[in-house]
Length: 247
Image 1 (cartoon, rainbow, N blue to C red):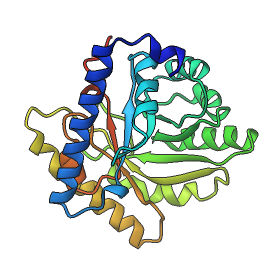
Image 2: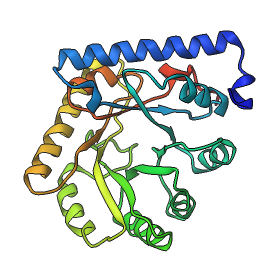
Image 3: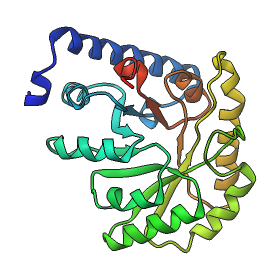
């Protein structure tokens, strides 16, 4: 056990394990309803504002879980950098928040940052490619799609995606691995389903056009079960796992 996790009390540890087991059960059940292979579904634990000790404890404890805890997600560059500096050993970070171009350089330097979910403009693509090239790496990303056409969300509109992917083929150090979306909050979870269906249809359409986009990052605490039923391969879950955020 690391020095970080030693600071957690027994009650907190038991609560973390209980929360994870409940999520695991729901993922398995949703996958079974949709006749999907759970090995194709990856969980990203979103640690936003939560202490690193809780994240490390899960990493240490869940090595034999049925659901793969693929990575830890952060939506603020400074918080990711601070946790990365303190984290002992190897970890996969996914950056899931809106990414400003002047912050790309910090992520590109870190080998532990393995996926950026929020590629949302051509200018950002150019910057990621430039910084990845400078660090002699290929940066993997997901293309953020504003599938709900929500003026409060970032991302490409659905009819812009194909043209962008064609333009992005010129970037030698940028690998677009799939699509991502963030939906508005709906009081009724079922209202998210049509948008997840549109994302799956868009993925199929782009695949038929020759683009390799195997990943579909969609579904968070409020709606990850529906996202699974509609084809999500990456789930971004924070509050259900770690509890309410400490803003």
